[in-house]
Image (cartoon, rainbow, N blue to C red; front, top):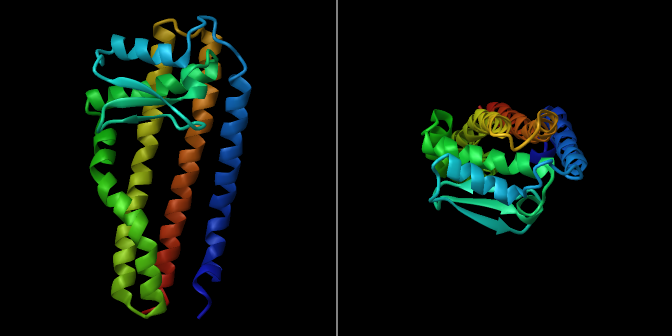
Length: 228
């Protein structure tokens, strides 16, 4: 039996890994390009986020500046919108697009957007699955225990489902963000196009992550078949 990490099923992952590497490079280059273009309004990403939250009736959500690059996220449990310094303090089109995207998640939460709610509900199981799935599967594979392998596959399936559900959540947040920025005049029409390119590039990373997860799951299923 070939060693677990270097069997032929590894070939399944190559296209997804290439896509993931390309997506990461694409989002970095696109963000760097449009982070150098200041928005006409002259407002920072933090100021835009605060305005959009207020206008959406979300005055109870706190905005936090956090370290790191592209570490921006909305925390529904603590009801905090966290923006990296590069977004919070920047007046660029890219920063405003990213900040508005995170506000889009807060609005999803407020409106109980179905995909957002589903993602939140499966997060605990998905988090457990991503932690335990591979150790259990490897143990089952090495010690010829199909039951352990099956448990690993089930747990990892939860992590894959989380990735799949994340796609519509992210795309919807971007759509909401661009619509708000356009309708309320925070970006000119040309600037909206720039922000769209940044958010679309970011969306590719989620597409790539989903592809990697799905192919990993397929690989586990194939390896499980060799133990029958």
